[in-house]
Image 1 (cartoon, rainbow, N blue to C red):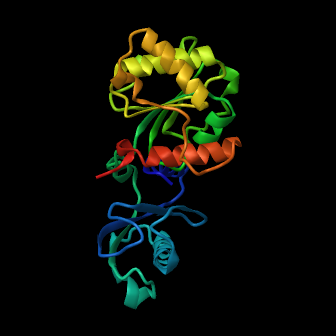
Image 2 (image 1 turned 30 degrees about the horizontal axis):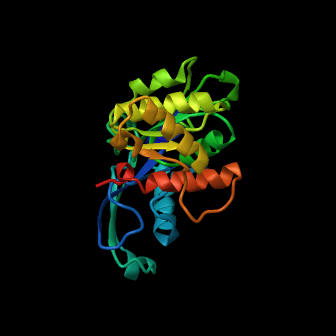
Image 3 (image 1 turned 180 degrees about the vertical axis):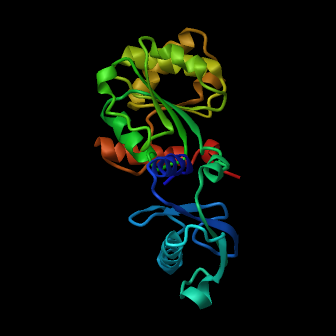
Length: 272
């Protein structure tokens, strides 16, 4: 579960009066299943997020549920060598901090930067499949389409990082994106794909410009863009077809997996 979604879920539990224990990886050394700053939330009946699974997580959940019966207990730290203490083969060491979650503590969470900002044009089958995959990936998505009925029902608790945008002129939304944005274009009309893609290429600062379609579509669009004055550097920014090579299949779910994997491999998505 991504941090923004975890934060929204935590706020909903606290607003509903549900006690929550936060399990935080306060520090780690060597090989560990998750990094410092990873959070997991535990209630009497739920576990939200993960600190890496396995015996480490099982022990943390057990300790957290014991704390739920002691609401006045101060924060607790567990220093766990993963190999000797827990029988895990990671070989590192993890320090966990367990505390009762408060609204003040929740408001003070530092959220990691998103892997990438994405402006996704098109709420058709492939667009919807991509958004489903991005539900659990830490990114920020402006999802643009001119057809309001094409968007599925949006749950801000499940997808707080995804913003549906209904626009009669989707190509005009391109100018609203920040420099370094990742763009995907897959609308229901080729003329609209062309207008949006041209607007992206003219910006010159996109981290990725991906257009759904064939090599023939790419050649046709590039010829038209060149005739309208785009230079070689601008034209060279276009990726079409999209998706990782070697993944065969045109089903929306298969295309979505291929495209999302491609985005995760882009320099824009690499956290330092």
